[in-house]
Length: 412
Ligand SMILES: [Zn+2]
Image 1 (cartoon, rainbow, N blue to C red):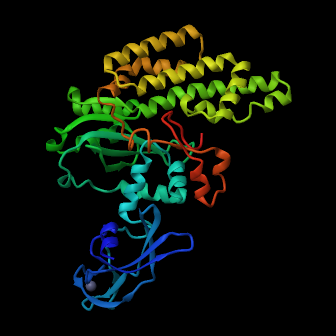
Image 2 (tube, rainbow, N blue to C red):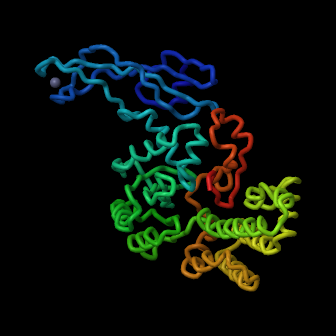
């Protein structure tokens, strides 16, 4: 029990029982060791126990990889001072009212969201879309306790769309120091003024410890960071967002080419090209036999797509190389030349971004910083669309997960 209590890392509780459910989830029933609460009417300390509320189940951080829930019967106290002797439920610091998760789990969700999407996290954690959104919303109004923070080092700014296809964004602000990522804040919108106001609110003592701002490609963030930190801080566009942009170029060409081939090829031939999306998105070295064949067939019909595919891989290789900023700049310049010579137009959007944001993009090579979790491992999980719908048992899902650095979301 003592060990489990340590693993739980929830203050002021005692474990009453631990169960393994039929689904092999862990349910830990706890009781609070704190006596009394404050009356919701008069604010006095009260400790005349009235009884216990119905159990609430709170999702918590996994123990040994298993989904873990904490069950608690909140204590209710009666005030003897107020008229009508009202009762108040005890509030505890490790979960918020009406939340189905502990605060620790909420923060875990927020960290998962960095360089990811609400859908991805909901699938990965096997929780509802709204639960993920709930965790985000619960943290919007939180005030940062700067006193608890010793240094910031890398600040990450990542926007998360709350609804698919809507422009309803929040910004997750993280700090990463020596591999430890902490959530600083969730900003209500992605306006430059909002981001700037937050960055400006960082106490002077901590501002001095910021070395890098790792951000999404959005101008609002970059300009806000520049205005607050000036030249003292390196601004990096996260490679994940860069990869998403040039990978998107290849994706668009694929869609066009598949549509063209549908018209030009016999039905039987076109059928043979089914399922090219994921092999195309994978890194070349991760392809398995069947996928290589599909790509071979596709490239026979669409040499253009092969050129674009190789160019995409070349660029990913550059980002994977341990080279200096200036070497990277030269290599990316060469890459741009190759794209222009190829006469492909699918990377045009990306080329114009390089034109304006080259400096922030190659800043990545200074310290290879990304605001995501462990680079290359937790960054991205992808599963095919078909496999995601209606899946109840995530075990099957996870057997089919591929990790990649090409910047894709589960649902695209
Ligand atoms: Zn009272």
